[in-house]
Amino acid sequence: MADSSSTAAVGAAGSNSAAAAGAAGTVAQDGAPAAAGPKAESVKGQIFDVGPRYTNLSYIGEGAYGMVCSAMDNVTSQRVAIKKISPFEHQTYCQRTLREIKILLRFHHENIIGINDILRARHLDNMRDVYIVQTLMETDLYKLLKTQRLSNDHVCYFLYQILRGLKYIHSANVLHRDLKPSNLLINTTCDLKICDFGLARIADPEHDHTGFLTEYVATRWYRAPEIMLNSKGYSKSIDIWSVGCILAEMLSNRPIFPGKHYLDQLNHILALDLLGRMLTFNPVKRISVEEALAHPYLEQYYDPTDEPVAEEPFTFSMELDDLPKEKLKELIYEETARFQETYQGS
Image (tube, rainbow, N blue to C red; front, side, top):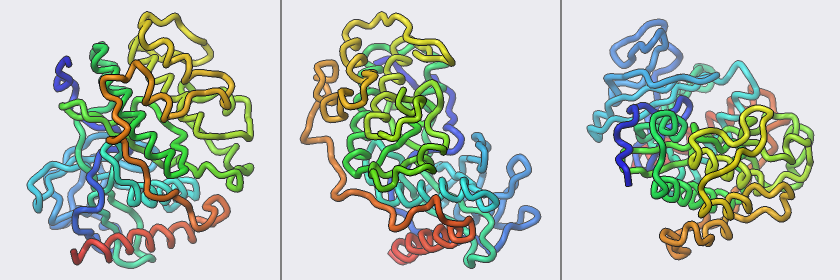
């Protein structure tokens, strides 16, 4: 494979990778300090109250409701990524934060981002921010495609890892719903991890109501036609459509459906059959993740004995759309408390 280490050593805002549930949980100081103290550092005007374990912070990027920095973990002597999330003024941000925390703490797979540590105030009333600590990845597929053209070996290996992670997600009865190049983290050895589960939902007709349809789903360029047509028949196939768009972009170094434009001619004949099966307009006829993994294009990597699936389906105990932001904040507090009680003393 061509060397991908020449890509910029920065991760995507709102994402970075992880080995899940191994590190000791940490509780941040109460409240948000007005200025950086002995346990806090200021980055671009944002206070990161994550010391003394995490120091020497460096800005990576930011999204709608959070900033991402790299930091030195003084316990492991490794650089990590820390995402500061401040969601509590908006119900939608609370929903996305709670979804991502609950899912990532329960998913354990090499091709899915995990959580190393969570920090927040000790008391619910003082909780203004949540810090999620994850393994630092060098770049993401979006940035990689901006800097170089991928070899066929790269395309095939990245696609296999995406599908391998998606097989686990779908086996837990979860739809990612926002697969796109910037949500695929990559390191210098070409390992890939899927991130950003803030829009994920359970593949369950009982949860298929108006809130499911009206919430923004997937960046437009990677959105399945049934979403654009407001179909109520959401299924795992919406993620397969997104992966098909990503495959086309890896092959051509440009989005296959930018804006209102449709399919550009593809030059990679070996991938065309698999691409066509993923981009089938009828979701019932679209290829499944298991069938895609077994496709001849991925023959050199295909190994069903090394493609783990979830032990049991994932489920939310209650419907998050109907909860006020105060209740969502309480649930986030309780979820992070369980993590800290489990791992802080281990």
